[in-house]
Image (tube, rainbow, N blue to C red; front, side, top):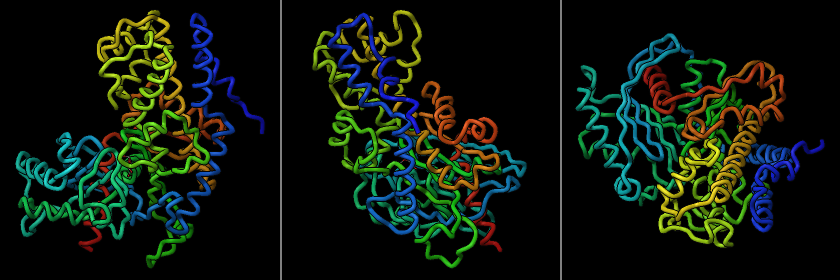
Length: 472
Ligand code: BGC
């Protein structure tokens, strides 16, 4: 099939006619390197399908992890009860008390604790126990009469190889976490031991990835949900797969279905198909998980700003931007927040006044010209557009992997800061998906839903089903 978006289509919008020829040549090269043409997306989809198939069949370090989650019952929307849920994300720990109302709706009381750097690097488990202790005390929660503990669902937003519904070994840290003596160990045990040390009467009855929580929450309100996605600090997805297709599943049941956690951030770490640039490589080389989670580093909120910073500095170094001057702030890693990118790409003022505030006010760059500001906006747009096109490619790949689903209406539950706050992210996801899933299908049958706080609510839903099964 002919490529409907060749490189030229991607390059043109990023030129600055009033800028020098040299500047425009550099922008052209940069835009071409970040371009994700339709043909490229087709290549990515087929690469992803291969990797998913291998990962479902056996564990292979070069393929997607495709982790069976032990979650095998779809929510009906009729579940009721009040449950405790913990949601450990990349930035915050949320402790929630979730009430499922049985009519596809829920309410929640939650307390958000920002995860300190010390917790990320040293004492995460004690930090979690302390926060849960505070929540129980402030909300006066205790075990039901006759019980010693409060059952709790636990969303854990890092890759764990599950060995049961309430056990799983951490395969690696990412998102700048590096708590020692944790990799390879059961995260539920580590958390539960901290609860004991801190006399917190809580028992984790289910552990799940945040994408699984998002899938379950969306399924509670929209029973046709087939997939849960996080486009946030990190990125990943989970979907319903038929057990017959999970070759590596060694449990007793081979019929029915199970949620599989793709851990798609690990797609194509070898960068065989991804449009990987020197700016990505610079980030990757300096990261604590060098060579891992490469796809995630190209699309998620923790990293996009840093890729943009690298690209901007490359133009400064060529003396094509800010008259060759940077600032102390901009010279430091991770100072160009992805939230600044959102502000910059959303600026429609004729003199790009928001861009000016971010560059001069926040990043302390010497007075900028309008050309400088246009260039920065273009760079952010190139990297943001690449992110959303890659995101849509991954979502389309998963849906296309189960073509039987594409005959009826389906919902996808999504949460995360990129989906919520990056300008036009959802609109562009729909637009790109149309090309690969078909216009009629996307317009009539595909619904993307924000599953806000989905990971916490999903943990409560799974905890509820486990608790129900236990009581027989
Ligand atoms: C983690 C996933 C998680 C995703 C979204 C990634 O860094 O590996 O387990 O689902 O972030 O939070």
